[in-house]
Every structure is written in C-alpha cells, then in structure tokens.
Amino acid sequence: MRWARIGPWPSTTRASAWARLRRIPGRTDAHVFEPSQRLTALEALKGFSVWAAEAQGDHDQGRIRPGNRADLAIWADDPLLVSADELIDLPIESTWVGGETVFSRQE
Image 1 (spheres, rainbow, N blue to C red):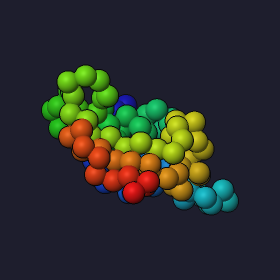
Image 2 (image 1 turned 45 degrees about the vertical axis):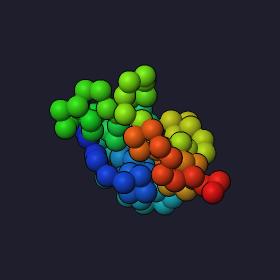
Image 3 (image 1 turned 90 degrees about the horizontal axis):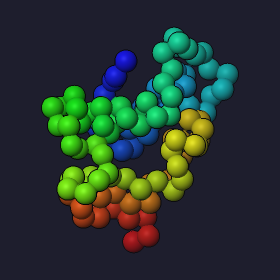
C-alpha cells in the first residue's frame, strides 16, 4: 500500500512518528490504534517524499539525484535508524528548496 502526505517538515516529523507507532509518540503506555497498519521507517519516509511527489503526478521529485529539484531536509541523524519515539525531537540541520538553503541550524 502506498500513501502520501504533503506538508511542512515539523508536522511531517510528528505524522511520520505517528504512522510508524500508531500511538502518541513518547507515550509508550498509550493505546496503539490499528497496530497492523504501522508503517516501517522507510515507508513513512517515502510517504513524505517519493510517494507524495508521485501522488501529485511528479515522478522526478522526491528523490535526490542529478537534475532533480533539490527540496530536502538534512536531519541531525538518520531518520530511518532513529526510533519513532525519538524522531519528533530529532533536529533538522538544514532545509533546502530549489537547491538553496532556506534554513540552517548553524546560522
């Protein structure tokens, strides 16, 4: 099953954590809603990148490769390896739109 979510990174981070956990991130005692519908980390990431672009009819966006528009976020750690509970607090180091830095935590 493919799914897509289009939105700004802060809400995306929380939604990605929710999609992976199917409960409130950080609340390990919270009720798990439909546990069989949990996404893997890779599925959650694709839902905000490749699959979101494809849902809009764009089969080039959402991928990092030469010739593509460089819209991306650089995380402080690998969002595929960080636990979903930790994901909501994972800092964004920089955000790029059209190949230009629009946010940098260093500035």
